[in-house]
Amino acid sequence: MNNKQKGRLYVISAPSGAGKSSLIQSILDTSKNFELSVSATTRKPREGEEEGKHYFFIEDNEFDALISKHAFIEYAVVHNHKYGTLKSHIEEKINKGISVICDIDVQGYKLIKDASIEHTSIFIIPPSLEELEIRLINRGLDSPAIINTRLNNAKKELKFAEEFDYRILNDSYETASMDIIDIVIDGKSSNNKDKINLKILRDMLS
Image 1 (cartoon, rainbow, N blue to C red):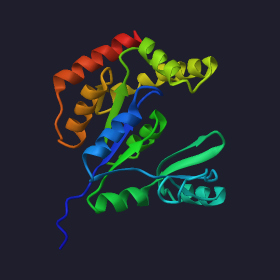
Image 2: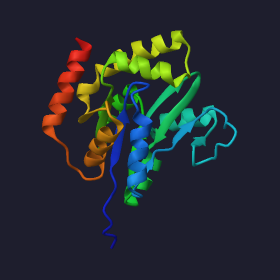
Image 3: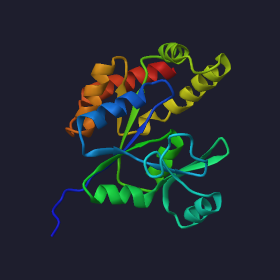
Image 4: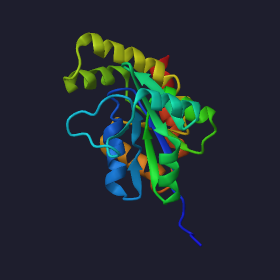
């Protein structure tokens, strides 16, 4: 009889530039029992990308067939390519005692929530929209027009943050990293801190 404790699914979302990837990496660096979910995609592999490690690369018609079989816990079309999280991949990891982190946008989170899939959700919020703009500019990856688009998208995404189980303010990487590890690895969180973060969020959107 296998008494191994099952893993859990963690859904983490944030506006672009909020520092989500770094915080997810802090979880992966802290515990070997966590893995980042591998998505399926219809786009072709880029140089250095490996099947099953970076993505599951599948043909468009196969992706559509999987949609019809309800094989994805969430999927979306991005830049004319389809991306999705396979239910079988998540279940396999969780049944092996591995907790899976799903790094997805608000739309993907809503699909998971609407499907009543057991999960814990966390939204990363920036200290302010002004700070978010500074971070996007300092990354040096986007044109002013794209940064403006990302900021407009951020405002829309932040409106959904209250629907998540937890909100983490990323004004300091060290503090935010401790907060996310407290929730995900240690299974504890501060209700008082979440109330403060909720107030910051509401002030940001007012």
